[in-house]
Every structure is written in structure tokens, then in C-alpha cells.
Image (cartoon, rainbow, N blue to C red):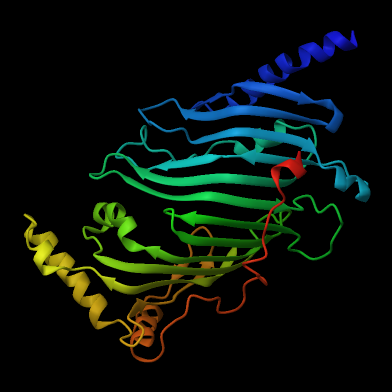
Length: 350
């Protein structure tokens, strides 16, 4: 009976996983195979996909080469039985489209419940290896594909197995490459037990070649970049759903308008708009550092934070004529050592 049960277990698990991930009527869940590892209390799902069933979306919402769900043995030292997820080569695709049937945001799906149902114990940690996140717009000309690749991330202590009394017990650390050339760093501390979001967040993007985003700029801003680099710093501090922080976008060595190139455009309104954007960035840039930027303060309810327009304009002038902003944290974010984060290897986790 035990041998028969062991032989039947992969098929039973495959049926159960298929039924679990196929719960959302808008998305069809598919997997390739199930591998069972009883000796370490784990099983592995291979080639998982969530594909939208409405419209004609050419990419899945989520896909992954392998998803390994296992007991976190280190937690047994704290007398807790919890699980951890290891995901290899995941890809997440958000798609903008003219109709609801063809766009893809994943909103409204019971994704957390699906993850909980895939494993009999509470999930305490998650490791992501070599992932990617895409924002796509296939209906634009040219098509838009803005992405992060080589994403490595680690989420720890979601169930507070050490019974810490600090409210921000869980951590999220991630590094990635934006558009195959710029460095992206993410750090977050959060309270997973808070009824309303409570967290501290720090994000930094350094050295993005803005010409790599021309498809996005042309599609949504009606202009493109001739040259330049983009840095971004974000700090947010949320307590019970009320957030306070800032977004700091910085453009270095930027050039938007080229008379010899843009004069060939057929649309005079686009030519005028591009020239206006180019003049504004030149007039209000910090000349010694060749930088255009500002700091946008955010405050209010997290679902609809308010920005201070006058402060944003004042910070443009401050960057231009007083002192250039630097792509660094201004304070209030969690302590971050951007260079120290190295999630454990796949082999050690297996």
C-alpha cells in the first residue's frame, strides 16, 4: 500500500496543483510535471504557466521553469513548521492594451490564496533566481517592452518564526538589471500581520541609458531621447496605510531635441512638443552637473497618495540653480547595504 501510494503521489499532486492554479476564470493554469522529494519534505512543479483566456495576449501573466516548495528545516530550531518557495527563472508580464480583454494586470486574482493552498504549511520565505519583469504594449508602434532581467530576490521571515517584537519583521531584498545595462536595487521591511500596509521601502535605479526607453517615451510622451542617462531613487514609509516619502527622478547628460533629425518628422505638433520638452530640460538643468531632476514628495493614503506640485516645481529649481540632487537615499528608509545582498545558491537551497 505504501509503494502504491508513493507511485500515485505525483499524479495526485499534479491533479491537485492543476486544479489549484486554475481557480481564476480569467487565467488558465498549466504545468508540465511534478517531482516529489519525500526525504526533504518537498515537491517541485516544472514549467508552470498562467495564461489569460480572454483576448489575444501573446505572453503569459506568469511563467517559471521550476517552483520548489519545501519545509524550511532551519525553522524547526525555533519549534515552527513552515515552508519556503524557491522559484527558478520566473517571468512576470504586464500588458497594456486598448481593451480590457487584451490588457493584462493580474488584478483581482486570488494569487495569495493559491500560493497558500499549494503547500500544507505557512510560507515563511521565498527565493527567486534569474527572474524577469516586463511591461509590454504590443499595440504601439514600435511595440513597448520595458523590463528588469537577472532578478534575484529573497523574502524572509513572513511568519515571524523567531517571535520578534519589532513591527517590521519581514524583509525583501532584490537586485536586477534594467534593460540589460542599468543596476536596480530594492530593499523593504514590512509587517506581514498589519491589517493595513505597514512598511519601509527603498528603491534605486542607476545609469539607465534613456535611449533604451524610446519606445515607451514615444508611445506615452510623444517624444524620444537622443542621449542621456536616468537615475531613480524612491523612499517610502507607510504606517497603517498612510504613506510618506518621495520619488527622485534624475536625468544626466540628456538631449531630447535634435533639429537636424527631428525636423524630418511629418507631424508639426509632435515636432513642437519635442522642441518644448528639449528646451525645458536645457533651461532647468544644473549646468555644472548637466542634470535635470527633482524630488517629488508623496503623502497620504497609500491607495491615493497626494503629491505637492509646488514643492516639486521648487525642487526642479533647487536642482537647477542651488544644488544638484544625488542618486542617494535622503533618510528615513531602512538601513541598506546595497552591495551585501547575495541570496543563497540554488544547490544549497535544494
